[in-house]
Length: 334
Image 1: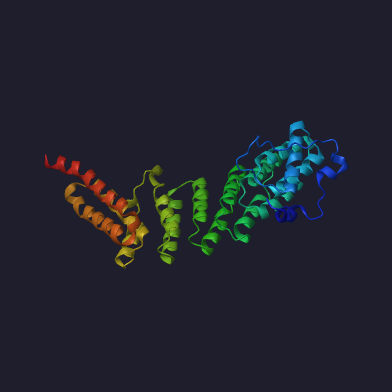
Image 2 (image 1 turned 180 degrees about the vertical axis):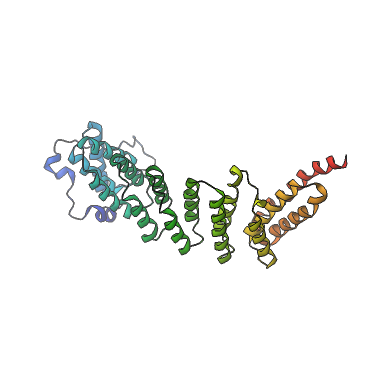
């Protein structure tokens, strides 16, 4: 890490620990890279000094206010250092420190390092210690919305943990719907919707509501993989997780109307292939032949026009259906 970066975090007026009288009793502990390091990292002098003192404090097991302040400096220089975060937690417990102040500190760190796993994990531990999730939904909303990254995995993971751990489901669908309205291809928001709806349980009325919601979204953007995946995911939840795609005639009618209207979204075609496959395998050979031909034709279209990069997969799907229907055909001929 270069000097310019160190100065950004610690400031140009930063006083080295070796020049601070209150640290005279600590002998810094240098990093042991061995006698002949192959690729020695070019640490700046500031970075090296802070972590030399950090190692010394850890080695002596000191848990004091100055140790806590030292972890702050170390984490400014390397916010991904798990060992320092863990030691900071140990110090906080020992000092019986103000954990609400720690949350304020973490809000600032997350603002600068929103994709850092260690800082999110540390915040989770502090929230658990306080048993107070009152700031977590606002914090994650800020990370997802105001910071311009609505697909931040760490923020979503933390939000789901807070909702699940403290039963904060009630207003979440409204939040998710707002994100989907802003960006209907936000797969993270669709995933969050599935997470919330699953908690409430897939009753027939709820499934119907979600199917209607999703079909309306697909009408707006027909080539939206996120919405198509969600549609299938909800349909599969019926009949205790055993529902087939043709269990919902209104959806079958909807997708076939899209196809007849000339839409050739690969996600629509993939849905029809799965639908017709299921129907063909349920019927006798004499009745399934027409459905099988539909599958073969759609697979050919996918392989040659709409999803060429996965052409071998669609060729496999067609061949696999033929193999599945062959034993049935032989059995009926006997």
